[in-house]
Length: 334
Image (cartoon, one colour):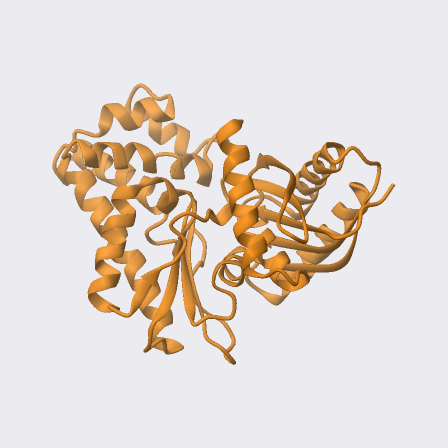
């Protein structure tokens, strides 16, 4: 059995992934969530298995044995080079075969650029993502997209969940050594890691249990401590906001975005922390008064599906608005 007039969006990030199926009018048919899907932190085969399993769940939800979709967009973290694209296009091809999905049109692209095109179209506009990692993308009519950041946890990801978590761990080690003040964050951070001492944290950091996502999971702890007035948490979060503003300013300068433009704030850290959103927004407004935050009610989880609708639907904004409404309703009812 096959279906026609369908679009598929797959968002694979460093913390989690989701697959969404809708019709060309934006009516939500089904969605499912899965584990992290960044092959820079794993390997192509692990990503292929994760994508296949999630797509297979989506096929099962549709009560069919085979899906035919007009357009499938795969938004994947860690796709940064031509070689990354070659590897992940093969991963997606195999995953579609394994999960019994045939797509007339397939796009495999970096998660930032997919979300950019999904949320602001051809611009002028930009997106700033802060989740496990961080990146900014900008676009203007007739111009190729421009990026800043997104170089991964070894080389960048400033202002991300990982950067916030790592800064907090560094601070408590400095305090323990006497190289800095005792932070008052020790108990909360150790508890979040399941450790009972600083030595245990050091042992964990060099064990097989260490992961980028585990470090990033400390960011909400630091944000909660910010709310209590903890001075070290305040310094870390304000530093993250400054770093994120620099990412936006870099793409705005390079394009350049000199007139009114939309900015979407995306990723789990920015979408779930009003404090960080407000700090970033204030900094950006001071440097770019012609910038308007555009996605206050549109989650980046819908970026790939929104882009698929732009590519394959005549309904445009109407379909994307319908998708957002249906998705939010489904989340609230789950």
